[in-house]
Length: 286
Image 1 (cartoon, rainbow, N blue to C red):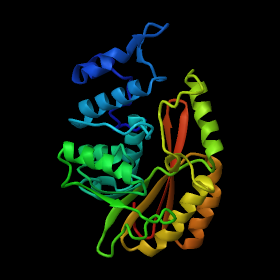
Image 2: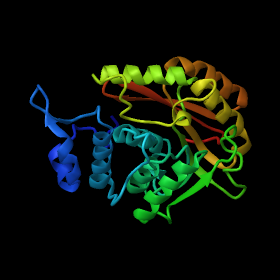
Image 3: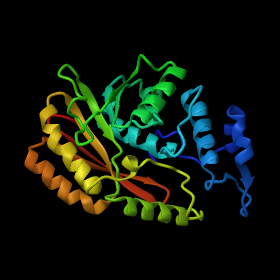
Image 4: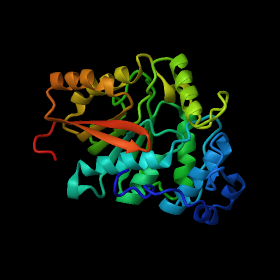
């Protein structure tokens, strides 16, 4: 993990349960003698996230509706730290657009706590935005996080980036799968790797959070196409890329758009490897 990631060491569940006592009921000792939580239980995953957000990011209250995406906090933090490196020493107090802020509002929470970033979070899901609004209000983040509803699910930046907006960075965790069936198969693989039952969706996720027509290639291609219209308003456009084999086609598309610079940043969390695709139209960017 990134050197600045507060979660690069193993979870100290004793310390976490001290700041969030509800976590205690989900802690047990595994056959190796280590304390862990039951990742097959969505309530345990949510309780762990709540404890991490309280201990490391000063969050007083956090919750999400049932069946919405409950993201792994260390991976989300890693993305933000790597993105911050694009700005070098100028990484503090930036303006960030979070495409698909979700019901969990995790990127704005971490980004503001670590770097004092200000956020605009967009989403097509009004239930998710209402959930994010509750989190923002409960933690006095209203001065730092603004939410915007994307009413056209076929658009990403249009109607969200206003003429007077200036963003240092765009971040995005796109829907990776190309169909509901592919998303279900991916969930089953994850559960098998974790030793979970196949009917347990411990990390949750609404359909639009997990898949879209054409998968991540289609979604990111749409980002790239739209990005040129906002090339003077955004410093760096970035997005997560799950599958390495998708990068050549996306990079070729960026080359055709005449971007000034493209970067691919690899992230490792345990056995999992993912990538950040970043591009800018500004010359002289880091």
